Image: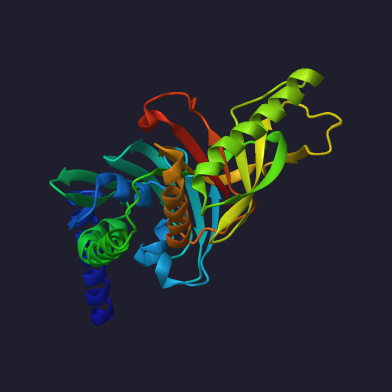
Length: 336
């Protein structure tokens, strides 16, 4: 009986000590790691502001090949949200939502982990340093009043820190291997465009004939539109039907609100697919558009994006502008 009393006394003392220690210990925890990445802040920002891309470098995402996601909100920036579910003990279930995004400077996300009522916060700060960027990844959390959780908080840096270091190394490797894009490329959504078109095949071995021929087609389309009272609905465009090494086949088109019944057999009706697209803004001469298309294709390959229809160009600027550097063409590739 005396032994039992002693054991109980020890247990009471231990419990009391844990309670006292827990009262003294702070509930807030913080983890911070940094790395230098040889890339621009913009190149890094698009990887951390888009939660669909974190699976390419985040150690937690990579731990479980069977992890499932539900994405909602915008593609990137404030409101982008990810829910994940995993049976892996180190991954579990939870949600992450971007609550602050300063382009090329900072991303702050709110995290809820399964089993915890209070949120944690992860921050990425990007500081340009010459040709490189200093990237700092932090975690802030509140362990609450539970003494066990507060004691666990003492070991948070040693538990999470190495994984943060691994994640930053993965991010560095991914970003530094990324193709260099001189065009302004982004993933966005586009509405379907109704258009009237004349299909033509162009020969790249005779580039001097392309511009005049497209001008003739636009003239024919505008003549039909004006004669038949069709309402135009946008800038001239081209929809690529078939591409090869010697040239391409395209619908040279003008967007319209309602094409109606077309009486000219040489003119067809078409519609671009609506939904997600990769968009590039090309500034400059039309003769250099091929390079922008190659950049778009490299972007899609790097980000493992799958095409979902024909690409198209919209000629935003007036080609009578004498300064060709001011010519703007928006290039769209529909994706799944």
